[in-house]
Amino acid sequence: MGLEHLPATSSPEEVLVALQRDGAVIVDDVLDAATLAELRGELDPLLAATAPGVEEFSGLNTRRFGALIERAPATRPLVMHPLILGVANQLLSDATAIQIHLTQAICIGPNSPAQVVHRDQWAFDFFEFPAGYDVQCNTIWAITDFTEENGATRVVPGSNHAPDRQRLEQDDTVGATMRAGSVVIYTGSVYHGGGANTTEDETRIGVNITYNRGWLRQEENQYLAVSRECAATLDEPLLRLMGYQRGAYALGYIDDLRDPIVAVRPEFATGEGFAARK
Image 1 (cartoon, rainbow, N blue to C red):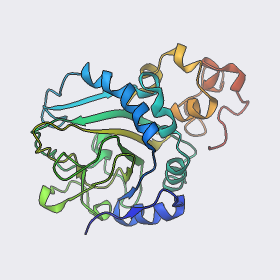
Image 2: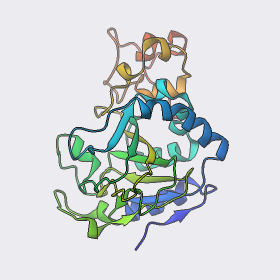
Image 3: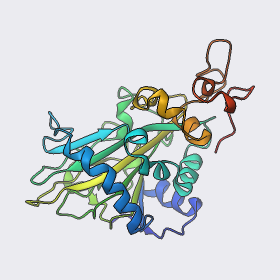
């Protein structure tokens, strides 16, 4: 079976049903042409300046670059998109806080083999989380069309319910094909991988924004990826999502139990050290 496609008008609850059932779901046509053009204007120079990967998992003809909150400000509305945050907060609803896990553009170049099928939550030192316990909510925004030929993300539907450490193959997957401006939302527990780009001259460009539980370490260190000078210009909800909040009752405070946001925007500090979930 293929992945379910839902309209951009869907509610977080409707998206969550498909996400928990299949491990991934596509929401179509979320971004308009003007937003896509703005994103391309910021991402294309970064892509041109980025070297391809040096090992097979990252992709020898795949270019990846992060720190998008500072380097590509047009991605900030994607990070803070209400539908995505609604889904992420519900998927991880028993966490005190959620946070940004990473921001990254993934650009699969021509003549690239498929990536090995894996679970993103293996980044946590291959710790085997309990079955049915999600720790991540992931997105890949299609900045170009995602097709079978140019490397659309491959997903094993329903594998979020499978045992850990499985060795699944490309034949087990389906393509997350979608138009530019759409987004595939998937859990850290679903088996997936970048698809093969069999074209001669087409680069598949996606923006990968992932959220996780606030008590886990972030894959991309937001405190260093985003400079202090840039952080001092950002709004409170984005800063707190970046990690300038406590991740649980006693995690992430500064010195005398101060709210960590005081380091960059003291006017947003609270006595409790963390704000209500956005």
